[in-house]
Length: 76
Image 1 (tube, rainbow, N blue to C red):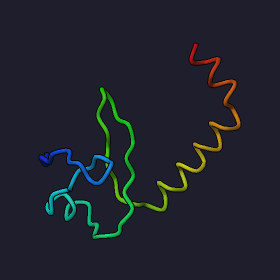
Image 2: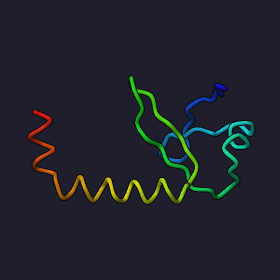
Image 3: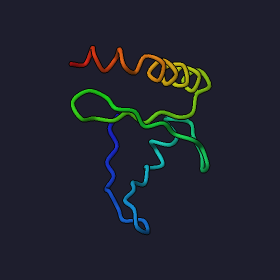
């Protein structure tokens, strides 16, 4: 399902308001933590807080720190 929203000025920042239907589909309420990750072709993915996801992100971040130089060389 696709949901439409607009980018709005919120104080000195820009933000989006998620439609009620999108929040219901993600099973989140006010105050919930959402993760925004990059997806293919300039898209982003918004997912609700998930303990397994949080654990995987911490492992990935540690790996990227530990192997920063190797990853930089591979990217050349």
